[in-house]
Length: 456
Ligand code: UD1
Ligand code: CA
Image: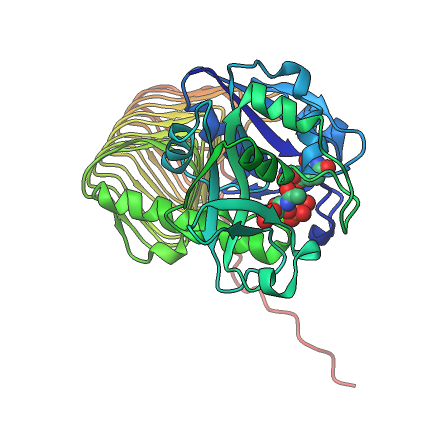
């Protein structure tokens, strides 16, 4: 079966009150349209066409990575008119699947059931029963329960308005038939639009059976029309992801206060995640890892037995097994920590490698640096890696001990097992095994008196 998916995405989304086209708004950091695209991409033998219109340049520009045919609908004259724009591309034998770009949580299994109902003698229509069907097209059935037509809210009689079964807009139908019906659509209705839904009555007239199926939940077919619905679907989506992680053995202290914006590419056992943790992009997390509250981890690799304490930001970093990070640590891009490294509070590390068992425990900035193994970097150490124009590297060899409040002015090397005295400004290489310090001599002045306030 060759499938042609047509994603309708030309609508404006006035109620979003936004400069950004509706389908560009995001759930879990992915545009609504991309959710729909990614789902349908999983269907075999499928060609995707996106009908776009509002915010055309922006939509195409920011989603040009999607492998799709793009068709612009210059004026939005209705769902039928939108599909007409793609009619030239539809093959007679294709099974055409109609999706909406603003219905992001639709499930593959639901679509597969829909597609299985399509042949030359039948079409598939996804419907749902709503306690409050207001605004939707109603599914009109005859006394034997066969679908007769869809009537839009604005065209419905009072009796029809009582029908709770509504059209989700999602349907699948053979290409040849669809094309023959599309050319017959008119806009003689309350909204003066070309309704795609009118094809149902035409199909019934040709003895094509309308086979309906329903989604597993209402949320699957909910569209986003305003920011309340956007946030509602975000939470539904997040809850699904949280459930999936818990099924895979992750402890989430509170699944309602956890966000995954991307994917966890690999997942160890017995991961324990405290509240308000955000995982962004592609992360890999080993076994027996604990992640403290209020931590954000972006595109990183976390080894086994790593302990990340509260309030850390970790981006494009690698953390070796047994390491301990935070609280309040920031690992910036290209930080690579070997095993059993300790990074403490208020430490920022950027573009640096830190070898095994080294410790940077308090209030330090380490940038563009290679740190050897068993190095101890004292509180308040700063690598001065930038002269305002260029960046330079600092090298701290194995076993070095950097006293507190030291500035290392790069490019500079601290030799193996060297000791730097506290409060030093190191501008030249420091030899191995020696104590190096640069410090103003301490003086004490005897008989010195504090100034006193003059009596007035
Ligand atoms: C449509 C259905 C209605 C169904 C409802 C479900 C029709 C006539 N009505 O109504 O039966 O209950 O969806 O939400 O089909 N779009 C375009 N170009 C257009 C018009 C719409 O691309 O010219 C796109 C929109 O961007 C949106 C989708 O089609 O993604 C549906 O459009 P919308 O205006 O929301 O349809 P409704 O009138 O609500
Ligand atoms: Ca709608």
